[in-house]
Image (cartoon, rainbow, N blue to C red; front, side, top):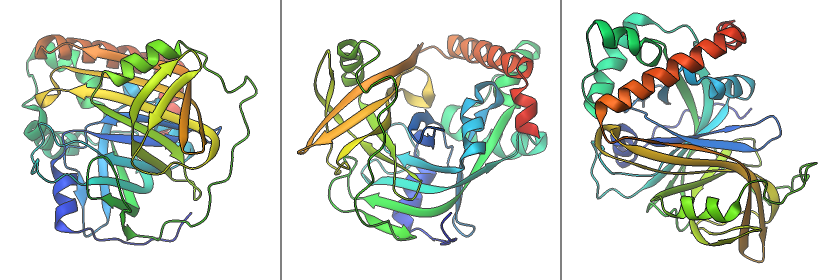
Length: 321
């Protein structure tokens, strides 16, 4: 792993990290692909210590398993809507670093530190006998993920166009090596036309792949078209030539995250002659209602269900060890 760079980022970058309502976390799969998904960072960062963070639930613990196996992750601060910072600050900030977490949540820290922080972004939590029980897996079993920053790449606009400013460790030089194609082939394994239309309909779209030093890289993209063979993608940031396993997420969200939609894929990216084609292999996603009560009922149900499954399969205990 790279040596500790101890970067201290400038004020305009701190405003982005401290103010964005949502960001995207990308982590590495055992096959050296990348998965990217949206999270709520609630302004977690420590400039003097050189760390940023986010929280997740043990009930949605698959990402924690992957991070435990490979702690090199990336956070993409890519949207300004409904946040606490200056909407005119259009910097796209990509943080690469080493992630750690404790699977046994510190109740006092969750209650006294995470709770008030989250309330600034998403509103006060529901309280009472029913809500305390129903949302226990979602609120009380949240896990703090701390990322020791190794490098920040800062672009001047949210399309990530032009060369980025580098804060911290120098970015690796040279072309990115090709990856071996999957044994099941590189073509689409889900309906690519449907996937392309759904992704194109959402305002925020991000592509993630593993860089030369093992850290994920995450860039915004547009969908130029789709057919049975895959999606045609366009990016302002240059993509590496050749083929590689790549993750994709597209999403939208409302104020305080009351109402959101996300589409997520893993697949194969092929770049040749400046043209980028993406073949989706897996798909997932959800659409949450723009009603806080219904949203909390759904969050509580999913967190309880997933946490129960993780405990039955021994995955929750394994994370604690």
